[in-house]
Amino acid sequence: MRIGIVYDLRDDYLGMGFSEEDVAELDYLETIDAIHDALTCAGHHIERVGNIYRLAQQLVEGNTWDLVFNVAEGMYGTGREAQVPALLDAWKIPYTFSDPFANTVTLNKEMTKRILRDMGIPTAEFAVVRSVTDVNRIELEYPLMTKPLREGTSKGVSPESKVIDKAALKNRCEYLLNRFNQPVLVETFLPGREFTVGFLGTGATAECIGVMEKLLGDELVYYKYDGAFPGRLVDDGQALKVRAIAQKTWEVLECRDGGRVDIRYDARGAPMVMEVNVLPGLRPEVSELPVMCELAGIQYGAMINRIVESAISSHL
Image (tube, rainbow, N blue to C red):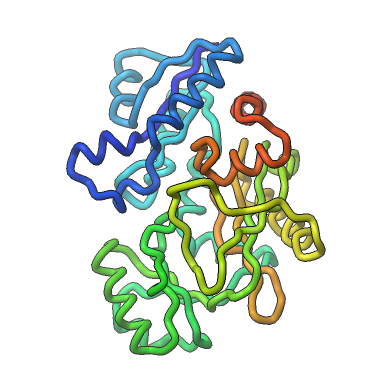
């Protein structure tokens, strides 16, 4: 099968003058090399396409593929993760991971939470700050957690994200509004255990790879991707509750091929969905999904090829 790999390489954008924070969600060359090697070992013919601009140019020139392995995060716009899937839909080319709907919804944390809440899936109480004056209308109980509404990879999240009073909330929201030029999600702080639940497959047919507890340490509310992921697979009572909630979340949002659902327990001992990642990081030995697969006995190459098999089934 002829497979094109579409991706945003962090080194390309660093060379254009973007900061390390700007490119936090983008891929390392070692990730693209690993995907390429896994697909080649499975007997596929691989072409590295690059970003959406190179993809668009090749499509206009008449180039095509049997499948596109899409890991492009995008750089611009509220639907940046949906841009490549939408373009490939227009050309009727199958691709890995979720469709434009799931990519757009899950990038917007407010919309994700509203859909989950409507479907009876637990998520923390929240408010959205679109201007600093909105802080005056927030009636949530402190402490609170603040983060950009449409970012991933812990962008905009630091120890200062946890605020304990109105003054701190106002200061943090003002910073985030100015830095990221987008609304701020304000949530009830969740002090309990945090888990990420991994999936391979689509919707109700997806396999839960396992539940991994994030080893965050006291009061640590963020994680930087600079080494092996600090987590362990668990199957105790709390983990089983998390697994069931994550499975329903994966089905409700019509997620495809592979990804994760992040869940954390609140102060009352109830599990709350935090985020859904439908375009997961695939950096070997570092990103959560590959680490979870390794811990569950699924080697990197097998994981990549299961994602491809799921994508083929999704587009039949």
